[in-house]
Image (cartoon, rainbow, N blue to C red):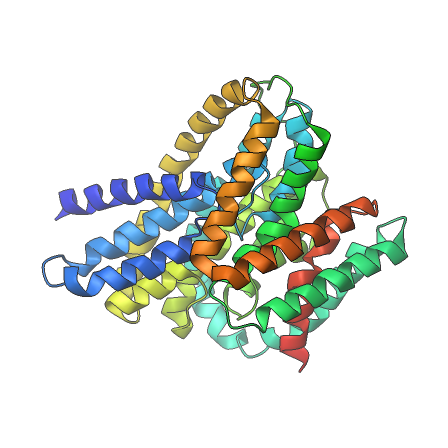
Amino acid sequence: MLIQIFLFLISGIFIGTLTGLIPGIHINLIGVFIISISASLLISVNPIYFVVFIASMAITHTFVDFIPSIFLGCPDTDTELSVLPGHKLLKQGLGYEAIILTCYGSLAAIFLLIFISFPSILIIPKIYKIIPILIPGLLILTSFFLISTERKRLSALFVFLLSGFLGWCVLNMTINEPFLPLLTGLFGGSMLIISIKNKMKIPEQKITKPKTKLFRPIIGALIASPLCSFLPGLGSGQAAIIGNTISRTDKKGFLVLLGTTNTLVMGFSFISLYIISKTRTGAAVAIQNIIGNLSWKMLILILSTVLISGILAFFLTIFLAKYFSQKIGKVNYTYLSLITLIILAVIVFLVSGFLGLIILIASTFTGVYCISLGVKRTNMMGCLLIPTLILYLF
């Protein structure tokens, strides 16, 4: 049995690497696919193997999916904010450092998850009813900080409200995976369009280890991620913004925070499935559909899988980051951006249909317009913050 578990763990790492590297392929889509095929396979395959496969795939994905976000400017729906500081570092020849910073955060998240999982099991049930009361205040405070740090506060407020209105409209539409065209357009498509327009050239990338303080961003992520893991409407994007509000940091520290929140939110979704029988990620939904609610033995198996796959994914991502850093400067970035944009449009059409393609176009040009106003692109996170505020206040 141990050999089979190990083989499924390695298979999960392999598939998680592929999904992380392919722009637009979110782990939720893979979760839906696994659910659809698991019914026929469960007759001949032990469900424990599927659980190991899903957990290792999901965790690996959270490490690797920063590579296309930073090198291509096409984020996953959980890594959209990495485009902002990551692309700046890429243009300075520090794309490798940007990836390594997210890896540091993700690896720290693995050990933090193991360390605080069992205290969380004791504490969360006692405070679970209080958490929704705190969320609106945290989101309002976060929104205030986003806008107040800008020199052009009125422009920042306009960008925040415009993207928020767009997000509210999209999330109220009947469409499959609404976040895919929305966030891909705002943070990925807009960046690709600008790169094509400016005929951006990527300088030779330096293979150097980054130097930054890890404590502050990790603490911010540690406080914010559990809140977002146990509540509907909140994901790693909101967790990162809340975490950065709690513990302010620079652009390198922000990448560490993003890596930490991305992996912590995924890991905590398994714990929330055990504690409150609620699912917050596609991977947790897939596991619940296969085995139902978690037993403590199954939770230990998942946490063990998370630990092993996380460590292996860390070294695998470093290897891939070094490889792509050496190759990216030899590629015509304008053509690469154009090809990537076409691929994203095809994926959006296949997943979200013709309406999704319209949303992608609208959100892309909204993103381009917001960038032209000369304010930080983090203000476009209003597309998530405003709908979430409406959800909790009304």
